[in-house]
Amino acid sequence: QVQLVESGGGLVQPGGSLKLSCVASGSILSRNVMGWYRQAPGKERELVATISSGGSTNYADSVKGRFTISRDNAKNTVYLQMNSLKPEDTAVYFCNLRQIRLTTPETYWGQGTQVTVSS
Image (tube, rainbow, N blue to C red; front, side, top):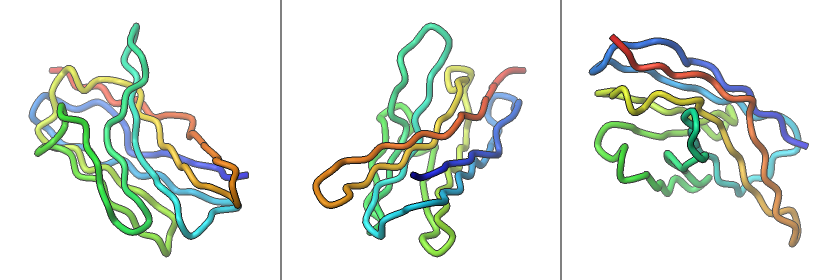
């Protein structure tokens, strides 16, 4: 099992910045993909960004150029730096970890952290 704990959410004005953190613990394999997803009220959960243990990144078009995902493998931590925030970025942000144990895929989710962008 893997546990994910997010932090860093909050209320910010449009144009502001926030940095989310997610610490993973438990049975973590050396090769994995960590990422952030978000879910706004009445909408489906959507990809924000992912980063592999090798450092390859992937971003949703809506956040490219504004958000940066990074990770510290030694600390099993993934970060999401969010700049130039917009009201439409308001959502619960979930940390995600995916790995393959032998041939079995595993997916884990954090409990989520609220990000509200409002004046």
